[in-house]
Length: 294
Image (cartoon, rainbow, N blue to C red; front, side):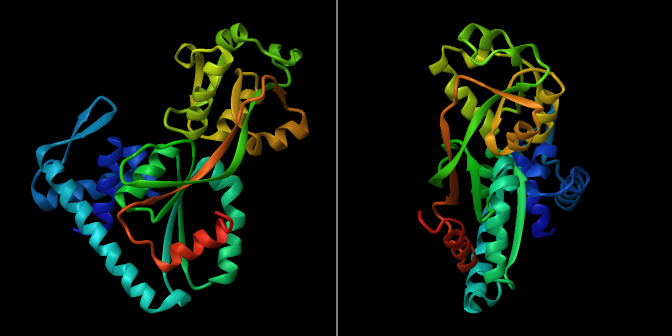
């Protein structure tokens, strides 16, 4: 039994899904499945039952989950204490971020931090907002950066300036001839969206009622797991979407996407940390570098 196996087990148990748990932990599905199989052999007990596409903890799995979380938390506290004895000449910070932030906001912050603290190891994993929040809660991430509200116990959120979602269609789409869409058109259009749990999807659904649209009634024809996949499908004419201005900027300049009204509200990004865990000196230094005015 290894700590890595326990971390992967916690990730899968939290999301009730092997593939999503693997992605949240920054590992492959095969490596995650192998880790769980190894734990089951070690303990001589089945840890999960498969229910459709999901997995559910068995009684043995529920017992292990509680103990594994305690063990991982104690291990991280020890690592933090030892790292801080050496100051910031050493150390490690695990950062999990949602897709838009990881691709368009975080890289410059990482480069600036590395320039000041070259000996500190920085590990980054990407997931959707829900996955990132679970990673911080379970201790596989020291800090998380997300788009959209999370509302999970024991997690603290610190908002900061974010971006704005843009309502978009491909340049050749029938709706590209319009400048503004009314509620009826929004409700009847074919939509291409991120998966539930993503900050982009959550923020759009929160904004739609103010435009007179019930988000549960949208005609979602494609549901895709990345911003880039959504953008490419919409450029190809698959339907209407709402994604970050940061993601759409290059396509808008190239003329392959058209932005439509009504404008969607600006959204804030958020730093999330665990209320009950001490942040390492490395994590505190990264936060100070990335968010100097918050």
